[in-house]
Image 1: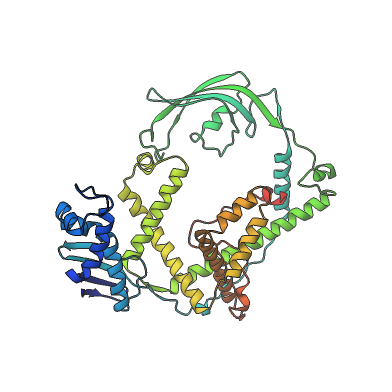
Image 2: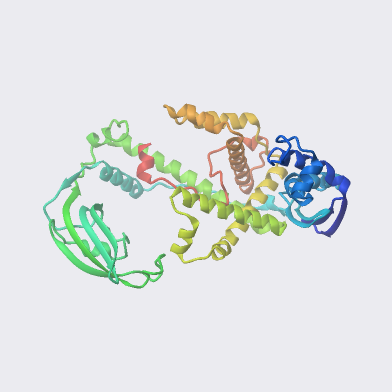
Length: 460
């Protein structure tokens, strides 16, 4: 093979690789055997025609096309091995000629990451304070959630549960037609459009009302943005919450039951404190990572960033499919083209990749590792937390190689972030001793984890 290095940088090498007939021959023989089993040649049984006959029948180019599938990756692997080039990802390939075969390979190398003096970063952990107002709010939330909805004979108030028929028309087109829906009007509830709840206040059971609202100018569906929507609403039923007294009897009905209100209050206080400590840990993690990003210098091939962008785009497509929507419909709905969406995603893709590279470098510098025992322990922990009939299915799902790789990545990120939080607080503990995995967001640099409500936490 003739190999030419057309371009060499710190992060990328461009190779032109030309094969001669001797290089091609083993691949063409394999191609012939594959083609022969599929092609019908008069006078020969399937797979028995000699190569010369097959080649005359189909032409040499057909055998070459068949062979490209394995000729290029295998020859490139050999070139990279011979040239001692370590590719960071799948190279970008372009076929230049077919006779003889030659192609160009743009090979992205390992990105260069310099962390700078990250050990000098210092951040303080803020003390967590749980106020009586916070406790009272959680107790009120619990009280509201536990209360039953009961019919009421009075005008509608914010916070009621109203059953109603709703029709909405924009320029003679019916855009809303919901019958018997349940809705809780609130001053800050902007569905279906801002101000809708305000028009419901004061309505009574059996009453109908017509009113109009302006659709916001930034409404995602551009065909309706800025236009007027004519509503017809008919109230079918009204209900309100019958709130219990916050007494010992109420406390006995929360979760598995508390002995009295004092015990429930102590539980809520502890849960709020734990939640506050966890939130402070997440803040320290994000703040320390942000500080490291300010110091870090990263050199990476544009191909690496392009791959990250492609991955993000594919993730968006999968997410939409899970919601039974294809990308074309989504783009139409938000008024964008694929190019627009990719351009919009670029900064996030760059930040996500930089975060991943920084975390990998931190793991290397701090000698942080995740062993198979760590992965197995996490799998056991995940399985034991489910219980019931799903345990067997979950065990099968988590024991695949892809699942284990994902778990290992999450554990590694959590371990790195735990160590980074120690460092920014001036903790001299060694990275080995700091290796205990703590509960934290495993996907730093991606979308933040959703937090459950305080009331939900209090019931756990």
